[in-house]
Amino acid sequence: MSDKQSTLMVLGLAALLTGCAVRSSDSRIGSAAEGAPERWIASKAARAGIDRDWIKRFGDAQLVALVEESMKNHPDLWVAAERVRRAEAIARLSGAARRVQVSGQVNGLLQKQRFPGFPLSLGSNTAEVYGASLDVSWELDLWGRLRASRRAAEGDQQAQVQDYRAARASMAAQLAKAWFALGEANEQIGLAQAAILVRDKTVLSIRERFAVALEGGLASQLRLAETDLASSRASLARWQAERERALRQVELLAGRYPEGRLLSQKGLPGIPAPPPVGLPSELLLRRPDILAAERRYAAAGNRHKAARLARYPSFSLTGRTGTSTNSLNEVLDSRFGVWSLAGGVMQPLIAGGRLREEERIAGHDEEIALRELQRSVLRGFGEVEQALVAEDYFARREQAVAESARSAKEAAEAAILDFADGAVDALTLLSAQDRQVQTAFQLVALRRMRLDNRVDLHLALGGDFKLRTLE
Picture 1: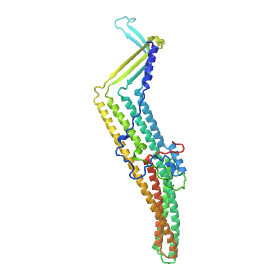
Picture 2: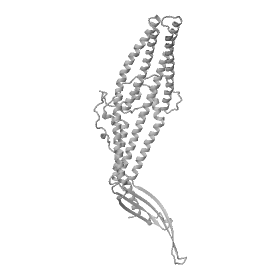
Picture 3: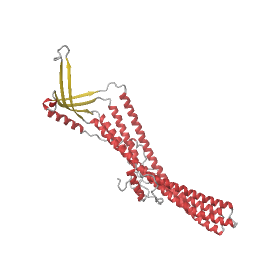
Picture 4: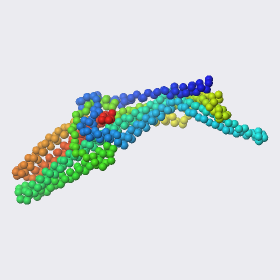
C-alpha cells in the first residue's frame, strides 16, 4: 500500500466515523403525568389553545413597547441567553469524544551515544531522526456510553432554552404588574386629591356652623372633619410616593436607569376576556418550567446510563501515517513513509469502587430530577387552580364593591344636601364621605389585584407571548 493510499485510508476512516449522529432523548413527561385530572376543578371551560397575545390584550401600546424594550435590554435576559449559548457549546463539546481525533506533528531528534573503551575519535556516535506524522484515534462507542453522555448534555441545553422562555415570561409579567401598580397609583392620587377638595369644603362648612353656634357645629365634629382632611393629605402623599417607586420599577424592568422620567398619567386598563385554559394534560407540554424539569430528568437518566456503561470494556482504533528519515530536508519525502493501524480493548478491573459509586450517585441524581419534575407539575397545576379560583372571586368582589361604591357616592351626595338643609348632623356627613372615599380606594385596589391575577393566570397556563418584533 502506498503512502498516499494509507493517508487517504486513515482520513476516510475519520470522516466516516465522525458522521455518526446522536438522536435527542425521548420525552419522559409521562413519569409525572400520572394523576393529572381530566379537566380543571376551578373552571368548567376547557377551550384548547393558549393566548399568545396576552400582553396586547390589555390594550396599552405603551406597555407592549416597554415589554419589547425589556426583552432587548434587561441584563437578566442577557444572562439567560448566554446560559443557553454556553449550554449549546457544552453539548457540542460533549460530542467531541465520539468523533475521530486527528492530530499532526513534526519532530526531530539529535542523539549522541558514547562507547567506553574506544579511542576518542571512535568512542561516540551521533544520530539524527526527523519525522512528520498524521495520527488518528477513535473510541468505538459499542455500548452507547458516549451517546448517552452527549444526550445528557443536549438535555441540559434544551432545559436552558426553556429556562430562557420562563425568564422572558417572568420579565414580561413583572413589568406588566409594575405598570399596573403605576396605573393604580395614578388613580388613587386622583381619588385622594378629590377627597381633599371635598373634605376641605366640609371643614369650612362645619367651621362656619361652629362659628355661629348652630346645631351640629360642635367642636368635636370639627376636629373629626379636620382629621379626615389630614388623612386624605397623608393618603395623597403615600400614593405619590408609590407612583415614584412604581415609575422607577418600570424603568428598571425595561432595562433603563431608574430616574423617574417615564411620566404616565394612565390609570388601570379594563379586564380583558378570559384566556383559554385548555386541559391539564396540555399544561405539561407548554409550561417552560415543567419542560425544563423534564429535560433535566431526561439528562439525568442519560448520565445514569453512561455511568453504568462505564463499567463495560471500551474499544479503540488508532492509525498513523507519516515519514521517518535521518535528514531534515527529506522529512516530507513520501519515499520515507511509514504507517500503522492498531486496535485495543480496555476493561476496568479495579478502580477502588469509584465506578460503582459514580453509578449510584447518578442514580440518586436521576431520582432527584424525577421528584423535581413531579414538584414542578404539581406546582403548575396548583398555580392554575389558584389563579382560576381567584379570577372568579375577584370578579365577584369587584362587582360587589362597585355596587357599594355607587351607593356610597349617592349617600355622600345626599348627605351634603341634607347637611346644608340642617337635616343631618356633621357626623352623618363625615361618615358618608369617609365611606365614599374608602370604597373608591378599595375598588381601584381590587381592579389592580384582578389584573395582577390575570397575569398570574397567563403565567400559570404557559406564559408565552408575541410582540411586534418578537416571535
